[in-house]
Length: 417
Image 1 (cartoon, helix red, strand yellow):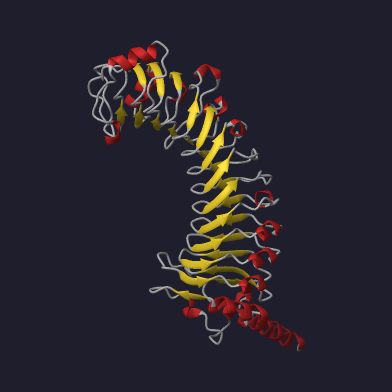
Image 2 (tube, rainbow, N blue to C red):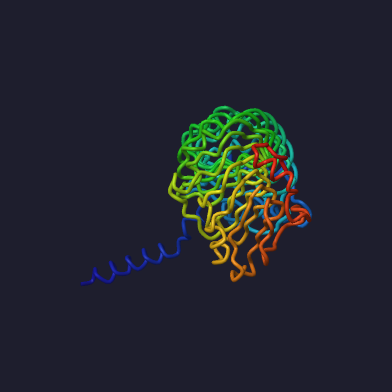
């Protein structure tokens, strides 16, 4: 019996010691090598006026940089695993200035490297390609210059690469879109040139808009759900897009693509945004009977304006919330499904101006919902009463001159608006 109280006391003492131990996150002690690398990174960067990101980067402050440095996450072994430079969790922070130090590559356990928007200049250190476990590299909306380092294609576990909103130049490294685990590649709003290399990775998101890229659409994986190539100088047919059955968002606007639009895009079950405006696309809108209608819902957008589409308009796009078919060469009467979709409030914007359409089935008793905008000006018909909602760019002429309409109906090409 005498031994039981002492055993109980020992158990209570052990429990007290366990409770008194700090959580594992507070026991982290950063390695000397990682601390030296961080201080080197700090030496090449500075807070912009109004920012205070580096105010916490005092290596002498208790308890340890792993828990006191802003933007830092350490592993249980004291290695830096996540480094988020600039914001420190504060929205609206003005960010950083300076340049990126090659010492970042000495943080060999990094899995995420994030640079918040600021005015950081200079090149992306090619040494970042030596970070074997890096999964996320996001260096957006700064003033980084020079080429994209080809060494980034050697990162075996890279999942997300976002270098958008910088001043990067040169070609996209050929191996970059083929990193095996890459899912998100965003290089938008730079000055990249050359052709887009084939994409072998099972990407979900590819955004290359607003660059100086040219050439045809490359080979693309069927896994893509988001694709934007807008605002480049790309050309050729859209045959390579036809098999992308998982697309939700497609933007190829403001390029030089030509030929017909693949009929499969009009029946893609998941596609909610199809932006193909301001190209040289020809052919017509396929009949609704040739493919099952896509399930367009709230927020859906289709913009095929400013192309050279011809023929009669089918009902395949009825139900799109925002539909832009203006500035083409469409003929015939608009199917009644479009008028019904407007009157029922499913279609809020319907732009058909600057075509050669001859009729719109709008009954006098039909009312236009307050939020709807329908523009039919500069076609080959008298405008129905009560349908107004044209933008200023549509001009002030309600209808085309009869001479243009008769010439087009006889087989003439007609002017392109």
